Image (cartoon, rainbow, N blue to C red):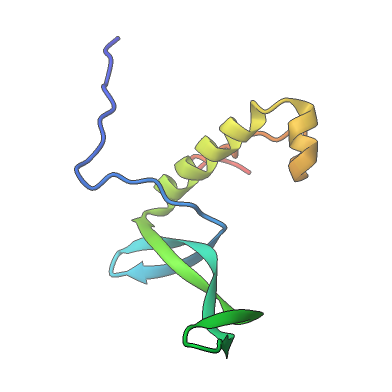
Length: 122
């Protein structure tokens, strides 16, 4: 048995993710999944101010903003690799204590998805 070290790429970073969008498409003879990880941003667009005697201003507390989703990054992978990623997440979630799973609505009996061997009987 050998050990395979894990190293960070030169472009490694961590990003806050609130959601993901997944799109599948056929590319020639292969299928691909694009999983775009997004976060929800609230962007301040303007603020109401009042002029002060002698110059300057103060905020009246009226602030306008809008929400938007920002794409953090997109992962491009084949369906079997996507299943591997999904299973890695499911395995990690399965290790949470039951009380923490309950907080997020994760079933206590969550289990990885077993790939079906090509040509096997159903």
